[in-house]
Amino acid sequence: MRFTERVAIVTGAGSGIGRATALRLAREGASVIMADWSEEGLQETASHMPADATHIERKLDVSDEDGVRTLIAEVMDQFGQIDVLVNNAGISGGSYPPVTENEKGDWEKILGVNLIGAMLMIKHVAPHMQARQQGAIVNTASVAGIRSGAGGNPYSASKAGVINLTQTAACDLGGFNVRVNAVCPGLVETGMTKAVFDYARSNDKEHKLGGRCELRRYGKPEELAAAICFLASDDASYITGQALPVDGGNTASLNLPGMK
Ligand code: NAD
Ligand code: ADP
Image (cartoon, rainbow, N blue to C red):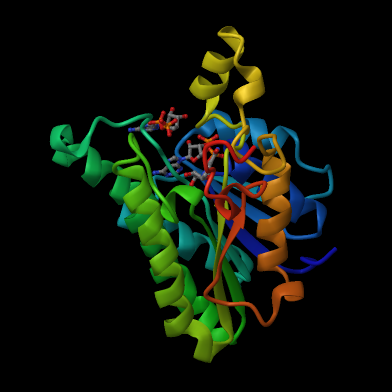
């Protein structure tokens, strides 16, 4: 019960990692504000909430600053404090062609949600944390923000930006006892990766899913939620500005040919 009497906002709470995180925060005592641009997804998450949990669901596009401003004002009116912000909403847009064929609009859309959306949430939430000299922010980056590969544009660039934003915000806010960290998920089965899993399963390649991870398997949303809640909790009271890979060992390995 690490979040008793704490107020937490989770973006992208209508699916996958955000859903698992919102549910875990609630189970550990938090009042949870769930924001997502999918109302259907939010309803589904709400239906799994513990009966005694305090939670509200709000439709929000994190890349829309007016919407972000309105939501935060509403949360402050209703709860008077924000202790935890999980910036998890994200889009991948699937696989991209080589850089020579990239469209500027795709870059603007992905960076707008994944990077600028996270910045906007921090911009509007952090002043309330600074005022109380207390708060923890966790951003969902990606192993794709640590390394990249063909097809990674512009998702990888957006997640590299999220890791850097994590460091900058940790420096800006550290003097106010507000911590900012990130998790870098490896391959996790969620809405975002549904096409990858569907393809593998229908082509007899299920064994390859997560095959590049040293644990030889893909991750579950709950395993990301555990790491996010650790970084958001007082258990991580001396950790800030860090990006923690939660990837089954994927980034520990060069994946050299012939080494396995
Ligand atoms: P998901 O698609 O299941 O969930 C993402 C949620 O974010 C959805 O409910 C979606 O509606 C919401 N969302 C997207 N854009 C939004 C916006 N502009 N405003 C509000 N809500 C928005 O995918 P997921 O895997 O759970 O993704 C969560 C985070 O994890 C993302 O930031 C993603 O980039 C990251 N991630 C996922 C994986 C993976 O393998 N699944 C790997 C690395 C990083
Ligand atoms: P990905 O390729 O990462 O899955 P999507 O573009 O499919 O990204 O978006 C993820 C989720 O966001 C989906 O549930 C989709 O319904 C929703 N979504 C995508 N674009 C919009 C949009 N412009 N307005 C509202 N919801 C959207």
